[in-house]
Image 1: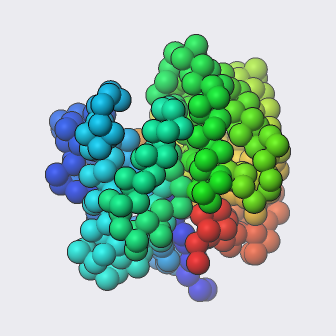
Image 2: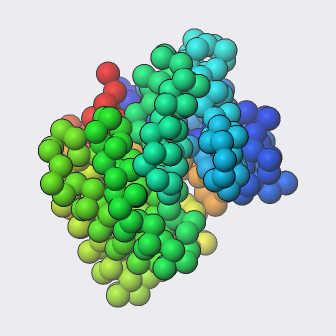
Length: 344
């Protein structure tokens, strides 16, 4: 049997110099992620019989930056350092294989700031990246999931500045990765961001509509009661109803209840959620992502959890109850990512 060809649509990387609290505020000393994670480590983690990773999409890793004040290049030094690191990969400092493997970049952007700041950031980021790396920048992310105050969250995503920023990304041909969290934040995060997504598309010509790529199934509460499940289901259905909107099968290990250690038990637990995603979006708008190395934190195989997650997705896609054709499976493994992130 020919190996499964994969585009991993969601990985994170950082050099030794950024693997600490100074590089990432969330990276506490001693935690498993507080060490270098580069593509050579990814190759080792993703070795698995009958799979071949053709390329990866790097997604910003929530690096540390200062409260916005004064010179943008100063308070956003962390995200600029992140771009410099990615440039070193693209320009071959880590070897030709790494340069070729990094097919796309979803960088950080200050979508919580006025549009003038976003435009300034795009100019600075482009100069910092250089032409070869900038060509790999496919989209941007500003993590919304950590805004746990409902009033502040709703005020931000409903603001004209935020909506205009999303439209600016669309006008310039960039996507926006949506990071919200039902389990730790609440269903209201999903419901509020749906309204923002709709507003960003309203009255915009098709080609200029921003592409939305939703991360991690919106981090569902897999132990939700019926009301919470239905709120997740309705919000995801509303997202799927929008043009140019995609969903990643990624990031579930951190949300699953403890005690699920086998591929079959994990696939069975996730089934109602995945069934709805596949029904709402269809396989042509669903893509595989590993969330490496974050998948290792609560993954059932520790440092080998890339393999565990890939096995879960294989089990899901091969389940006859989903009725997926080989073409549809191939779309999820790599075709959807290529389309959503405008990869050559």
